[in-house]
Each structure stands twice: as C-alpha cells, then as structure tokens.
Amino acid sequence: MSDANIPCEQNFMLTQDDFDQFARLSGDHNPIHVDPEFSARTSFGRTVSHGMLLFSVVRSLLAQTWPGSTLNRQNLMFPSPAYAGEALELVVEQQSAEGNRLVLKTTITRADGETCLTGECELTLPEKEAS
Amino acid sequence: MNLERFDALKEGESAKLNRTFTAEDVREWCELCQLDQDWPGVPEPLIAGLFSCLLGEDLPGHGTNYLKQAMTFHTAADTGEPLQASVTVSRLRRDKALVNLTTVCTGRDGRLICEGEALVLFQH
Image: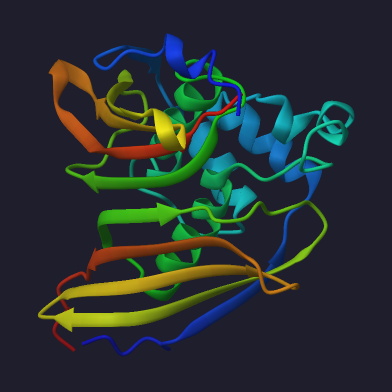
C-alpha cells in the first residue's frame, strides 16, 4: 500500500524572497518575517520563516511522494525559528498505515540540530487503478 | 513577563478575515515550494496561513509566538470561492501566558473547509 520511499528526506533552504512571497500569498506581513531591520532589534536578531511556509514545504513533499492523496488532518508544532539562507532538512516517517490511510511524522531540523517543525498528519491515498 | 496586552484578552473574543484565492495564487504557491503539479483547489497551507495571519496581525497580534496548530480538513476549498477564516479565544492561562484559540475556515454557503485549534505564547 505505502510503497513510496519511507522515510523520505528533502534538504532545502529558504530565502528572504520566499518569506516575502509567502507574506504576499498569506497576507501575513508581520515585520518579523519581512523586515530585516525591525527583526534585527528582536530577540531572534533576524527575520524568521512563517510557520506555514515550512508547512508548505512539507505539503509539497507529501504531494510529490503520494500524488493524488488527500490530507485529512495535520498537527504542527514550531519549537524553534527557521532563518533565511540556512540549510534545513525535512524528514517524513511513517507512524502507521491502515487500509488506504497513512499516518506520518514530519520533522524539519536546522543544521545546528534545533527543530523548526514537528508534525503528524493523516493522508488518504487514492484508490489504486487496475493495472 | 509583561502581561498588559495578555490581560486585555477575553475568552470568546474573535477575529475574522475574508479571502478568495485565485488560480494564480495557487500557481505561485506551487512555484514557491517547487511543486511541478496542477493543484486541484486551494492548498491546505494557504488555509492555515489565514489562521496564522489572524493570530500574528490581529488576535492576539504582533508579538504572538506561534507554538501549535492542529487542523482537520473537511473539504478542499475551490479557487474563486469566498472564504472566511476566524480565530476565537477559547482558553487563557495567565501563569504561562498561553492562549488557546479555535480556528475555523468556511467557504460558500458557510460550508466547513477546516477546523482546528491553535496555541500561542503571548507575553509582550
């Protein structure tokens, strides 16, 4: 059933342009995401990614790994911030599978080992076409 | 810990926003996350982004530290469909400066797209 490559991994990097584009798409123009000068004066010291931009990267990998699947539910936690221009690693692992339903654990980690996103989601896989 | 703004929050208080995503928005999102697929409907992270926008910009507002979001997706929103997202304060824990909020997104004729819960830290 879940014959995709699990665990699957993706190494990626986000840029300030990505933050700006997600701000336009989401309407969330909070300066902590888009204003480097403002952000330099905060405890983070620089701009941080929107949490839902990180979720976007997760969702994209799910769609590429299980095309045509439906996302039924998603839990997300954002323990540490993700910064522009830093290497990030996304790992998707299987928690359980029953019938055409798949429960997955998703984690985004920074190079220094801090976790930017942990999540659990449930996918419904498409009915297999007769082959 | 400065709780002046926290203390102004009330259980039951809510904030809303209306948004309609276009096919161009969805194409841009696919490009942003390097997804070479046609996406039917509105991607879930854009629905989730409506909640984070409300939390960060409106209720509780700037200074919100987003800790958790849980979501159940009932049906996919269509492009061109008028959406309304809302967040409502459900629980305030002053000792930890934590705010729980219910998060709901509805579409045309009030159909339920997504419901869930958010947890934020608000100590500014």
